[in-house]
Each structure stands twice: as structure tokens, then as C-alpha cells.
Amino acid sequence: MKVLTILASALLFMLSSNAATITVNPKNNLQNVLDQAAAGDTILVSKGTYTQSNIVVRKQVVIIGEDFPAFDGALKNEVFIVAARGVVLNGLQVQNTGRSSMVDMAGIKIQNTSNVTITNCRILNTTYGVYLQNSTTCTVEQNEIRSNAVDELQAGNGVHAWKCNNLIIKGNSITGHRDGVYFEFVTNSLVHRNNSHENIRYGLHFMFSHNDTYSYNTFQNNGAGVAVMYTKGVTMYKNTFYHNWGDASYAILLKEIADSRIESNKFIKNTVGIFMEGSNRIHVAHNEFRDNGWAMRIQASCDGNTFEKNNFMGNSFDVATNGTVMLNIFRQNYWDKYDGYDLDRNGIGDIPYYPVSVYSVITERIPTAMILYRSFLTNIMDQVEKVMPSIIPDQLKDDEPRMKKWKL
Image (cartoon, rainbow, N blue to C red; front, side, top):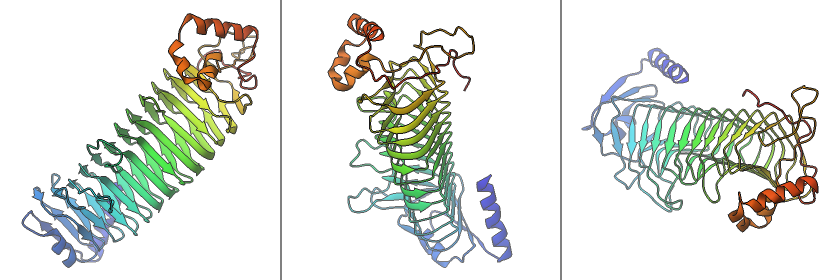
């Protein structure tokens, strides 16, 4: 709907200003056409391959491709550089940028402008897919952004944004990059209904980016799911984190985060669901943690966080920590390992649940002890700890464990 609104607005603008519609084909030089066009013109690009690159858009125009005309950077150059406000790129195929240690080469680069829309494009085999720099109120929507990066040093990000605000990154499929989406100093922006999968490092990575919302995205089979660092006011809602698996992998890494919400997400088959370090006043509620190695690893540097009304099912470890004092609140979560009773039948267990097992404490201190996991010895240790608690942090408990799982 947003794209239709933008195109309709562009059409009204053209009608009101007697703007022209210009058709180009592979024999035409698009840069020359753009330089001669007037603000408000529409450029219709015919099907074909255009061996043209470093195309700079300096005027407010709409560029529409017919059956995905391909603009090729020949593995040497960038392709489109947008330096005017109100530009729309729709239905183009952009491919084969160069790679450089000096310049962040992108299929489409948006610089120092506003109200730019990139929609329904194919951006293939680029270092950076869409690169936004010092821009505001831009939309990247319904694009296929696909590359074939093999290592972090030689790769860029699918959608890369620096020092921007009020962005909408929506409905894109992003794969084969270093990070699927990367935000740095990006505020008041929305990342919605994207599928970020099989990227080398993170599906989503953001730093110093406040008051952003990430909703209904899928992060699957990435090196790690999402890294959130040095940020406040983040809302992560109804995302799915699936099979982000590896020695140092997790669905979400939270480092130095404050005053944020993680609600109604699904964490399924990740090495770690949520890893928290130095994070405060986070509300974690209505999430499903299923079949993860660790559902949550909460470092002792975290406090003031609330974990409530979540489901924990089939995880090897529900909660692990490296400290003995816990200044966070757990309440009314469903734990499939809870073996207490409910004599008053109010749906809440009558005795507290301690989600940190003695073996998870030991493996936090001695990681190589994992080799004995699921052995007879670990079962004995857990049973002894229940009778004579001495190792697990006694403050980390759920005083109101739910007897039946929540319908999320």
C-alpha cells in the first residue's frame, strides 16, 4: 500500500507539472537521459542488459523497469547513487558491484537525502545491497537482496544504514551477506516482515540505534540471529529466530541495552535463545523458547529485567548465569521441567521453580564439562542440589510457575 501511495503521489505530481515520460533501452545512456530529464519525469526502462554503472540520480524522478532490466557494475563499480529527494526506483535488477577496501560499493547507494523509495528490485551479487547514508524517511520494500559472500572481511551488508532516521525496511528477502540488515546511529525506524537468512554473521545487527521497532521478521540459519548493542528503546515483536546454530551463536545478543521490549517472539532450535550482558529494564514476555541449547544466558551484569508469561519447552538448559546474585524478576512462566504441584488448582504451582540447573552453573565455569551432559553423573548432581541447594543462585526463581503452557 505504501508503494502504491508513493507511485500515485508521483503520478499526481507529474500531471500537475506537465512532467514527461521517457522510455529508454540498452542502446541509450541512462546517465545522459537523467541529466537531461526534468524533476518529476518518469523514466521507463525497457527489458535488457545495461552495461552501465556509477549512475548518479540528481533529480526527483521515478525510474521504473520493465521485466527487471539488468544494470551491471562489471565487478568494478557501484551501480546507482541517489543524491536527490523523492526518487523512486522500481522493478530494476542491479548486479555485480566491485569490491574495494577504500569504498563501500553498493548496488544502490542513497546519500544525504530524503523520501527515497527502493521497491520490487533484484539486487544480486553486490558487496552492499542498499546503502543508506545520512538520509531520512526512506523506504526499502519488497526487494530480493542476494549475494554470495564467503567471509566477513570481503563482504558487505544487505541493507546498510548509517546516521539515518525514520526508515522503513519491509518485506525484503536478504541472504548471502555479512549482515542481513545493519543499523548504526539509526533512530525511529521500522524493520518489518523481512526474511534474513543464511548470512555470514548476523541476520540483523544494530548499534547506537534508539527507539526502533523490529516486527514479524524471520532470522534463520545465520551465523547468529540478531546483535543489539549500546541501544535503548528497542521493540522486538513477533519475530521468529530459527536454527541460528554454532559454537558462538545465539538468536539475540543483548549488550548494554536498556528500556526495551522483547515480546511474542519464537526462539526455536538456536544454540542460545537470548544472551544478555549489561542489559537493564528489559521486558521479556509472551515468547516461546523451544528446543534451544540454552533458552537464556543472563550474565550477572544484568538487573531490573522482567521475564513473564513465556513458554520454555524442550531446551537443554532453560536459564544459565555466571553469578550468584540475581536482580531480575521471573514470574508466571511455563517450564516443562517443573515437577511441582498445584493443590489449590489455580493454575500456578505451589512451590517455586529454580530454572538454573547445577550442571548449567558448572558448564558456565568449566565449558569443557559439557562433554558429560546427559550422563548419569549429571542426573545425580541435579537430584543432590534439589535436596541440599548450594551452587545455584537461590534468588533466581519463578515464584509463580505456570502449570500449563500459555497460548501464544
